[in-house]
Length: 437
Ligand code: HEC
Image (cartoon, rainbow, N blue to C red; front, top):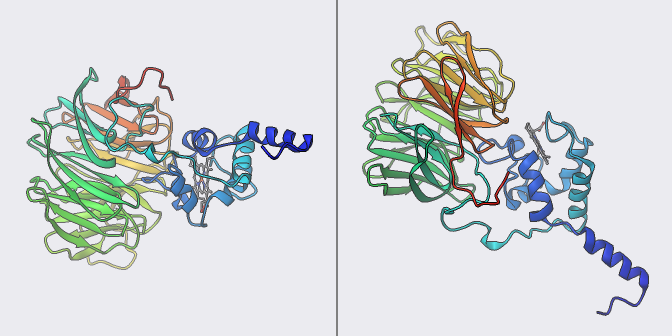
C-alpha cells in the first residue's frame, strides 16, 4: 500500500470502498424491480431495454442511457421514471448516482448467461407466452431457454423442453396437439423457431430466423406454416415440416410485433410499431391493404375463431375490432372496416386473445387486470384481478371456460372465463430454496 501517507486519504478511500456500488448488486436489482416491466425486449418503451448492461449502455431513442438515468429518476427530465409510479426512494437514487460517478462499470460475470436452461431457478422468469394443448390437458409456459409443460390444473410439471433461444416469445400447438412450436431468441443476437414433438418431448428442428428475437408467432389453420414478426421490420413465413424460410415480407416500417393467419390460411395480418395492421397474401408475399387507420404503435392481434375479423391493440390502449376485408371501395384513411372499438384500458395493450367459441375477447398489458369483452356488444363482461402490472400472455382453454395469464411477476394464473374468479395460481419453474422475488 502506497496510499496511506495521509490520514485523510485513507479515510476517503475507506468511505469510497464502503459505498462502492456495483451494477449487479446495486443497480440491476433496482432496474429489475422498478423498470424492466416497461423496458425489456418485448415492451421496450422509449426503445430502451434495461434487462442487460448492454441494453442500458446502448440506450434508447435518446442514446446511451447511463448519463440519462439520474435525470429521469429525479424528474429533471420528463416524464419522470418509473413512469406513473412513486419516485424511487432517495437511497436508490443515491446508489445509482454513486455507481455512475464511479464510472458506471459493468461487473456482470461473463457466465451470467448459462448455456442451458437452469434446473432450478434463482428467480422467477417473466412469462411471455402461454398455450393450452388442444385437448386441454397441458399448459405450456415460457421459461428461460425452455418451455415448461404443466398439467392444466396447475398440479405439476409434465415436461420441460429446453432449447437454445434465451427467451420464448410465443408458443403454439398444432390443432392435432402433436407438435408444439416455440419462437423467440436473444435480443440483437439470434431469432429462433423451434418445432417439438409433444409426445416424445423431442426437438424436431430449430430454425434460425433473422439475427434478433422474433415476436408474435402464429400458425396457419392447417398447421403447415408459421409466421413470425422480426425486429428488421419484416415478417417471415416458415414451413413447419421442413424448417425452410419460405418468404420474407418487407411491408412494415418498424418492428413487427404480432401476426395472425386468416381463416383459410392464405392471408396474414401483421401488426407493428409502425402503427399499421397490414393484410398480406401469404402465398406470394403481396401486400393487400392496411386493415386499420393508423393511430398508436401496435403490439397485439387476435382473430375471431371462424371469421376474418381481428382485434388489434397497443400503445393507444384501445382495442379496435376490424374486418380484414373492405366491403366497399377503399378510400384513403377510411375506417369503414371498423366493427367497434372497446373501452380504453389503464395501460398499454400487450396481449389479446379470442375465445375459441368466439364469445369473448381478452385484453391484457401494462394495467394490473385483464379485461374480458363481448365482441358482439363491446360490453365488458369480467375483470381478472390479482396481477402485478405487466401481463404479457393471455390464452383461453380450448373449451373457452378458463383463461390462463402470465407476465412480469412470473406466476401463472387461471381464471374462470365467465365470472372472472381466480381458480388457481402456480409458479411455473422450480425455484432454489432460498429464492424469492
Ligand atoms: C410504466 C412504464 C415505465 C416504467 C415502469 C419505467 N419507464 Fe422509463 N419510459 C417509459 C416510457 C413510456 C418512456 C418514453 C417516454 C418518452 O420518450 O416520452 C420511457 C423512457 C425512459 C428513458 C428515456 C429513453 C430514451 O432514450 O428516450 C429512460 C432513460 C428511462 N425511461 C428510464 C427508466 C428507469 C430507470 C426506470 C425505472 C426506475 C423506468 N424507466 C421505468 C415507461 C416506463
